[in-house]
Image (cartoon, rainbow, N blue to C red):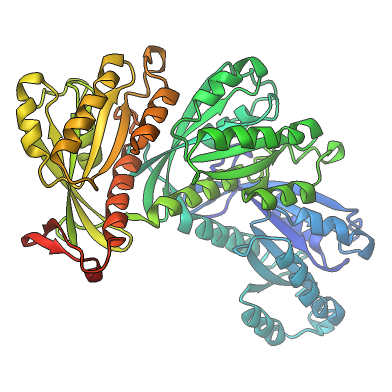
Length: 564
C-alpha cells in the first residue's frame, strides 16, 4: 500500500524534496494541493523559500515528505541554490502554456545538479495541463527532454487536480528505492558486521539528539548533558550486508575529555559535530580532529557534521567554510537538523556505507570450499583470556558466558575473500593451562599467523605475553604475522592493563595490536581479517621464486608468489 495520510510524527524516514522552476508555473499550488488539498486562483509569490510536510506510507514504511517551495524570481535565485543542499528529490516544474518556462528548465536542471548529490531523484512536471486550448509545449517534446536527461516525467493540473498525488508519490517511491539499494533496516541481531562509531564535538552541539534521532527517531528540546559516554545501536542492511552500528555519544565537557579519549579505542567511524550557530564549536573542530586521529586507526572514516542547520537566522558558520575545511582534511561533510530530521539518516548511512567499503575492499565472505589458499592461524595466551570465544565469535558468530576450558587444541575454519583471493583460515585454539603447554609448542608448527591474547582486566595475563611470544617465535617461521590482542575491552570498570602500555609493547616487539570484546563483537572481525590480509600481503611481496609451505585444497603445497 502507498499513499494516504498518516500522523505527521508517525514516520520511519524523512526525505527533503524541492519544487523548482520559473515564477508563476504553479509550484505553490502543487505544494498546497498535495499537503493540504487546497488550490488558490491567486497564490502569493513565494519570497525566498517556504515548506510544508506530509507523511505517507511508501512500501510499508512511514515516509515524511519535507517539501520546499523555492522562489522562481531572479532576485531569489541565490536562495534557491543554497536550499538545494540535502535534497533527495526534486520536482522541476514548467507551465505547459508558456514556452519560456520550458526553455528555462535546462538552466534549472543544471543548477540543481550543481548543488545536489548525484543520486537525487528528479521529475520534470508540466503543470496547468487543464488549459488545453492554451498549450504551447507538447507532451512529446517534454517527454523527449526528460528521457534525454534521464529524469522522470508527468503532466499535472493543480486545479482539477490531475496527477498531483501521482507525481509526488512516484517521486517519493523512487527516492525510497534509491536509498534502500544502499541501506535497509534489519533485525537488531541479524547482522554480519559490527562497527563502532563515535560522536565527538563540543558540549551542546546536539550529539545526543543526533544519536536519539537516528536510533529511536526521537528529539528532545532539553537533552541532558552526557556524563562520560553513552551508546546506542541500530542495525541496517548496507550493500546487502547486515551492519550493526554501535554509536558512542562522548561528552564534550572539558572535565570528561580524558574519558572521551579512552573511548575512541576500536572506533572505525566518527561524526565530528559542531553547531552552525556557534563559531567557537567550529573553531574547536581542529582540536577534536587531532585527538581523534591520535587515538584511532589511520583508516578511520570521518564525517564533519554541521548541526542545527534549521536555525538559518542564527547561522555563524557558512557551509562553504565548513566544506573547505572538510576537503582540506580529507573528511566527508554534511549539514543536519535533528529538529527537522534533515540529513540525520543520510549522515549516518553514508558513514556506515563508507566504513563498509573500507574493510570490504580487502575482505569478503565466500563459500567454505571456494578458496585458493589455506592459512593456519594460532590463538595463544593464558587460560580464560577468551580465546575460545574469539574463535566462536569469528567463525560462528557465537558467544558463551561459560566456555569450557580447551583441552589441548581445538580448531575451526572460515573462508573469506582477501584481495580478490579465496582464503580459508584454519584457526587453532590452544590451551593456556600449564600442563598442556607442550601441546601448544607442537601445534605451532606450520602456523603463518598468530593472535597472542591477554585479558585487559588481568595484568598477569599481559605479563605472560612476553613468554608466549618467545615460545611462538621459537617454534614458528620468522615471518609469522603476529597480533597482540587485548580481549574483554568491554569491562571498562575492571581494566588493569592500559591501552598505551599494550600498544607500546606491541610496537617494541614489532607486532600488530588491537583490543577486542568477544561479548560485544567489538573488533573481532577486524582483528582476524587484518591478520589474514597481512599474511597474504607478506606472501605476495616475497621475491619471485622463493617458496614457503602453506595449505592448499590438496594438502600442503609449495607457494610461489608468481602463482598469485
